[in-house]
Amino acid sequence: MSREKGQIVEQQVQTWLQQRGLTPVAHNFHCRLGELDLVMQQRNELVFIEVKYRQTPGFGGAIAAVTQTKQRRLRQTAALFLQQRDWNDRPCRFDVVTVVGDRIDWIQNAF
Image (cartoon, rainbow, N blue to C red):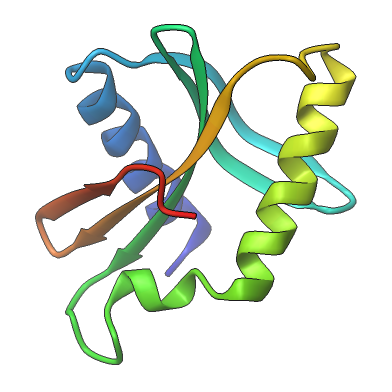
């Protein structure tokens, strides 16, 4: 997937989540450890969201791309994000949003 397509899908997902009550905090946070696609807030909880897009559901679908290694990297990146903002005491969770074709699935507390 091209970077441009990825950004379009992430924006669509952000809008979709806003319609469900989440508030944007950050988008495409980059550091030496990795990247966070979306950081949003739901009530008092910070939500780190990994967005995965596939045109078709083959090869295990989009969720199969969120491996144990990817999860570990996301946790490390999120820890740095929290530390930089002095938010270490904020409740948080990790969600995955998969987009396959036009279908969006939101997996809360994915890992």
